[in-house]
Amino acid sequence: MEVLERRAVITGIGQSAIGRRLNRDPLELTLDACIAAIEDAGLTRRDIDGLATYPGTMSGNPGFTGAGVTEVHDALRLELNWFTGGLELPGQLGSVINACLAVACGLATHVLCFRSVWEATAQGKGGRAGIGVGSGDGAGGFRASGMMEYSLPFRAYSAANWIALFAQRHFHEYGTTREQMAQIALNARKNAAGNPRAVYRDPLTLDDYFAARMITTPFCLFDCDVPVDGGTALIVSRREAARDLRRPPLGVEAVGSALRGRPSWDQFDDLTTMAARDAGAMLWERTDLRPADVDLANLYDGFSFITLSWLEALGFCGKGESGPFVEGGKRIALDGEIPVNTGGGQLSGGRLHGYGLLHESCLQLWGEGGERQVPGEPRVAVAAAGGGPLAGCLLLTRS
Image 1 (tube, rainbow, N blue to C red):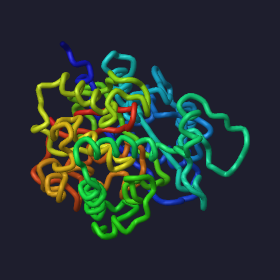
Image 2: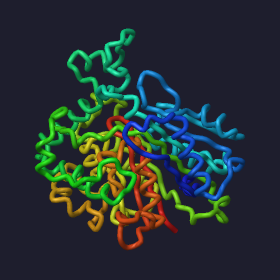
Image 3: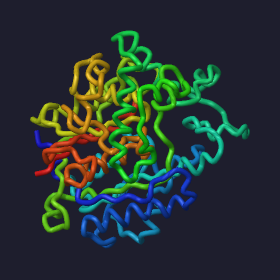
Image 4: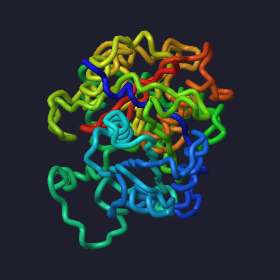
């Protein structure tokens, strides 16, 4: 079987300023990241013939997206052969997976992939919005449909509530504890201390973790990612077109995008796991590399339990064993068995919605992690994003 994604490489990355309530135009942040990525690859706007994003322009979720394909296409005056954007993708990195397939099939040569958010500014002084239910300001006109007809009467407004139920089931089935899960947040904060773009860099202790207010059992404040403003972008190029560019290209060894269970937050066939189970299995079906070959993993941490789920799904530990695996934090530290969320993830670095994790993986493989650089010149990394019925992952190599 030819693995088509191996015809694709990552040739450049870029980020805008990242912060809490930057009060900047979201399109401006998006363009800052896009232009930086193009320049990082040693390309010009004339070289870009593909464009991909998740989710693109949408209403009803303030700050959830900073710009869509049409806005970026027009602002950069691009001449495109291919583009995509939408919400129905295998996780946030589904847009990057699509870009890999587009260049592999010859539909484009250099695809600009981007994701921007401005949730912190949009939030203002109010609370975080639930998915699809607006800002919670009492404005009329919203009418629930689908699963939310059944969840909203019980005040399950948010993915925090839904993912918490997965975590509770895992705790019940396997004896996972909050002390174990806390290591995801503590490890992220340690790594964020070496990331000048991270929004939370002060030390975090286990006592601090347990003193924080409960959000939705078993998640306390530090189990939930941090809304920020910012944009992230990268360039996916056809391998043959990347030989003379500024950077040594990073190979896309394999992708995972499968969803073999029900496409549901609350009716999945096994509520101790998520779609990550299927995406992770697919990834290893497409490569001869194994989990032991991976030098670092940047795994979605919209809520800390999702990272535990990805650790199991990608085979870094057995099913139900993620709690004992992370206990004490040594295995997932920068100098550990499998360094996890090396830039602080979304819990301390900021909620860049998956793209930040891929950006960090590229930095590490290029040896540009600075104070948080994984030792030993890492050569293989995995980036994974999505929770519930959404999941997508990429295995990257420095060759």
